[in-house]
Image (cartoon, rainbow, N blue to C red):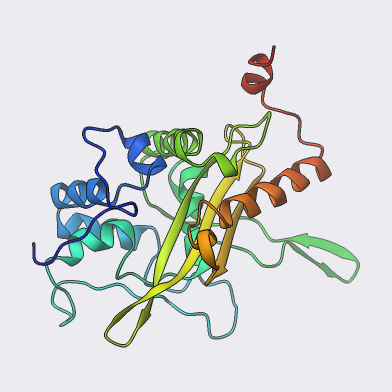
Length: 249
């Protein structure tokens, strides 16, 4: 593989679990996993989750994002490694939320809706959820839910909410400029769901060019998620998780 890349802290983790890979954002580990997966299967799954195409929400001028594929004149073998942790792939916020629905719906990507219902001549007509496609098997979706919960418990303390199991992942994307990437500017993000065992809400927080130490998603977007999610849980009067409550003294 041409070129080189490392982890966000410049360090190594040794032999680690899948939960630790997600919790500690170990780029080198997911790149290695993608090499075992191979180009064809990787692109297949990227497409299954809806990246590279419009979500069909009806929003005007919705972008389809950008992915590179072998044979398009842009693909390089090193992309298999960098794409594994998101570098070289452009997605919209609604695409990311759309993809995460597969983890929460037994592996099925659900069509996003902007309008829940309309009133037609005095009658309430709700827009029923529609399945778009199956992205992964149901057991894989449940495993991913648990891995994302473990990721928050292991490495994203700022996203935790007392009394509830939270699942999610932080992200820190470099900002492209002519000839490469900006030396300090980032796009910080966190996407998460709660309560993890019966999700009530899925939230994506995206912050453009946060400053100073807050340039990392875990330090800026994750705390924002926590505050918003906590307020929504209170507003909806969602009871604490039984498993969390049982752990209290």
